Length: 339
Image 1: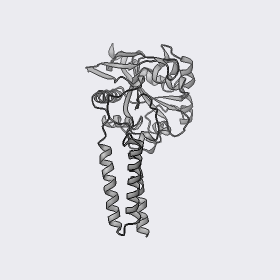
Image 2: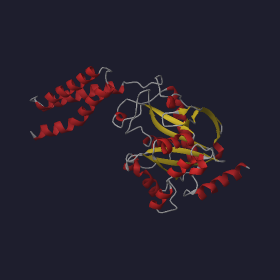
Image 3: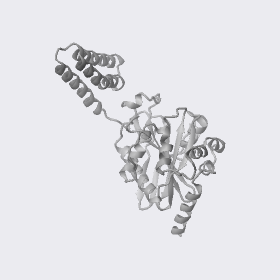
Image 4: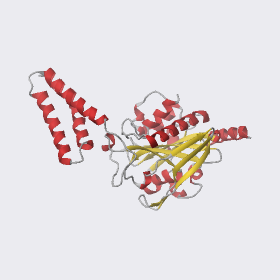
């Protein structure tokens, strides 16, 4: 009996996930999807509880899980859907030496969260003028889970922000539960900070903190190029978003790992409301102040709200931020080298 109980407990998570996958990602007909989920639960229940041979029961459940998993991995993402306007266009980058041209950079003028004037732009950047990168952490209330945005700073005050999100269709809204299944394609919002940050602070009511990162210009250049390669790849071959393995923070880490700038795994990569604490401990964000003071000083919510749609939004939200002197010193060095 004890062995059978252990068997049931061991198979319960994968079989529960299988039933949920059939329900969420299965046939459009709710009746058919529900019927398949119930059938799987019933057959596996009989196999685990009623079959005399524990081995036979385990084999039946393993086969059921393997069938669902094989089907689930066969589901194909698409770039051809009825997308919501804010994710309707795929960004693309062209790189010629140090010159980068990015098409479909988003710079919407918002009246409300859902009402806006669309502005898709082509912008040009000089990689030799990269100064550094900054990390935004935006919270909607939970102390444990936040949304992260990486932004690159160029000499002269230009900033390029990239937010890794779900690509939602018309009528869809994000769900933390659905994010674990194959419901949303992965989308890189390439945008002006006045769009992607202001949207969260001024219209969604989120609190945002901005941290100066300590990586060298060469390191942030390598990460940006890896981002741009992925952006171009997604324009041709879409991928699924996943709330656990392919989200706004784990994907940043993947890019860093690709260029040799990654750090060992830490649980705070998933519980990313503590990501700033991890970065401070490792020295990947400015640590010129004790952590709690650094955290308080890095809150840019009110400054973003006051800046509104101003053309100098990016400079205004950075006023008085920790790490400003270090960043200016890097900018002076790059400027002198350019001269």
